[in-house]
Figure 1 (cartoon, rainbow, N blue to C red):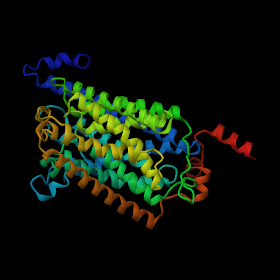
Figure 2 (cartoon, rainbow, N blue to C red; figure 1 turned 90 degrees about the horizontal axis):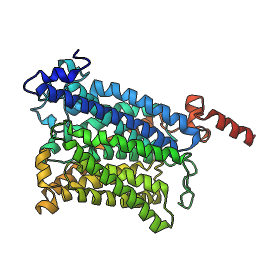
Figure 3 (cartoon, helix red, strand yellow; figure 1 turned 90 degrees about the vertical axis):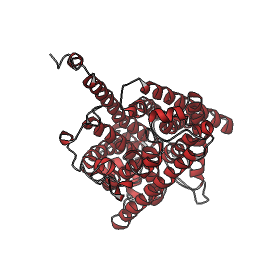
Figure 4 (cartoon, rainbow, N blue to C red; figure 1 turned 30 degrees about the vertical axis):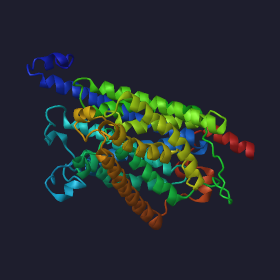
Length: 445
């Protein structure tokens, strides 16, 4: 009977603690599912933004790397991010230690508010999102083996260290760094890993001419790209609102509210700026602006008033337009716009807390304090700058070291012939669109 009607069983607890735990657990599990489903958005985003000859590879490696990430995070990553055996040591300032090969059955419940097993799943989904962002820098030119090796290092060490410093009780958490759902922890980390990859891999064949001018390498399906943004947008409510990890007084709804405003403002601003500058209302820019608004509001969704959420989104939409042009100008080939959408917008979103956070909401969340406008103090802004610089420098240096060693020892870019043929055939022996590709070959023959 209690299986069919669990709420009735919860109600038998006169303290209501069991009911609270049950509701919180359901909410966090739903949020986990929403964030995990964002991987479908990443598959469509990367597939739609790249060429048909690499479509099957993009879809397959995403599923495989998420599967591998689950095992690595269970074995090592969660312990580095949230393990507490060294809680009283100096090492705890930068990484956790303990809970390796994590077994939630032997762990205590966190304040009786939710089981630790559901918290593990939720945090795993965040790590997988950051990893998928990093793949933007590998797109259309990296060996499958490089995805495997970098997943191990990124999920086992690089991402968890950043998560620990801000979310797991590290020194940035002690300083009051505000990053509610991961503008820095998730998005900037993934973007800087992507930057290291695209610099070391160098541009795709045909992207830049000898005079430095860029050629447009169009993605094969803009409908996929648009659908991906919608899927990611929906999943983001698990990302941001789910980070309340409680039903409680319904604060998760406010977080969802500011998230929606930030996303909307980002999309509108990006479309308008592209229209004003180029004379065309560019769809890709608009889609990137929507994602940039989501990325930017991720850090501040629980800390700012609605009007500030709109401003944060508007600025993110403009920044993503100019950022994409900047990276192309310096000959950085970023097919998925990971550096602009998740990097530039991630930095802006994190710093925005130091400007727009309110004292009331900071006290409600229990992290840091109000920003410059609300308090007249630069203290929170300085903490936000500190978190961006320290976390960004760590991820960038660590990623360059890992990928640099991979490049030196085994090489991690496919051959020119393999790149021209496409990764579907060269890495997997089959096309993602077999009928279309065979038809194209017969026409050329």
